[in-house]
Image 1 (cartoon, rainbow, N blue to C red):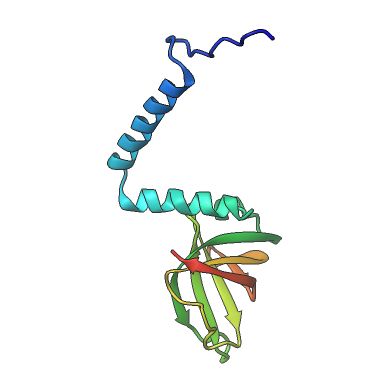
Image 2: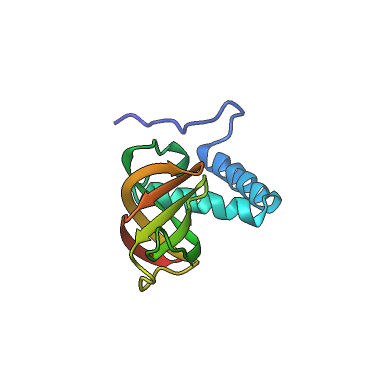
Length: 140
């Protein structure tokens, strides 16, 4: 059986050396990035791992699955009926999740990771999903 020569990069280094430089590059980038940038990057990666669509890529009047962390949860009456609103952030953008007729939902709290699915619409210039199906994930 023929021996396969070790792969080298254009500089003559082996892939193991490339990984070492890539690790240093990642370390330096992480040190220069703000906490918010790092959190956004982690949320984007987690959402991609869950098969979610980035919020910025969500088209209106289409069903999408999104995943991220709840930033705020508020009770806002709509038309005299209670409505629980939560702002979901996935590292790319935010979307408001609105549950009509609800004052509280167990587990829907700020800082909670969530995966939601529903019809995306725009209201007052913001993306909104009414009465989405959801799955609670761990905390962020």
